[in-house]
View: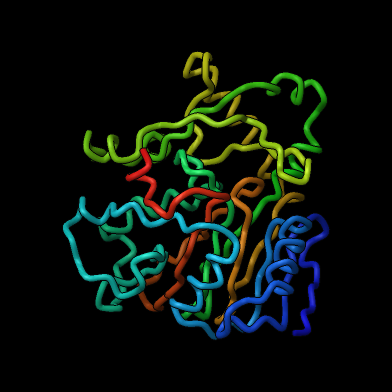
Length: 296
């Protein structure tokens, strides 16, 4: 195996060329990807031609899967067109047809257009997300990333001292309500209740990262209004252009990001003209393979 790793942004992000995911990953590839992620936090493996089974096998080399929470039960059970262990991030229904942008089924997905980190609203020990592009539209649908290690490093010292030891509330449904979503039921809240995490996370290799985003809805021990104002100040600091890498998708991209130290957002694909088929696995640092709902 001969891998090439090339930086994509002055701060973070890299592309990896030469990995074959149609065969089981060997120790050399696993260690190379781990090193790349520790350095760059976001990596895109180029020209991947992989089945769902290949995608899942590669993902499991880096940790146990976080399984989809089965939230489709709120809209009625329907057949899945992809492996049940994968999250469907596409604009397609179970028959592979485009779901209109203004359809009720896609209203909650629009919250991903605000910077967030996957699975911060879970108790599971999140690690990485791995999103594979099967069909990419000719325009639109870029993904933006932020390295929150660099954000933390750039914070004023007074702010670092202020946030040291604080814990934030991460609430999937409240985060969506703050963006205008309605219709959240008690059953939905019970399936994914709020959790708390430190406002500053320390990575296994020692770097600190600011742990915020669109699911952050409070600070433990703070009045709600004061917490939301301060969290928005942190969000505005973190989302400066200097911290953002814009990923222009290609078919066959397997984009990997570390949920512990990055933020990302989708950009709108408001047209119903093009299909977009992207499928995500999520791996945890450790633990059993269960859904977040089952672990709550």
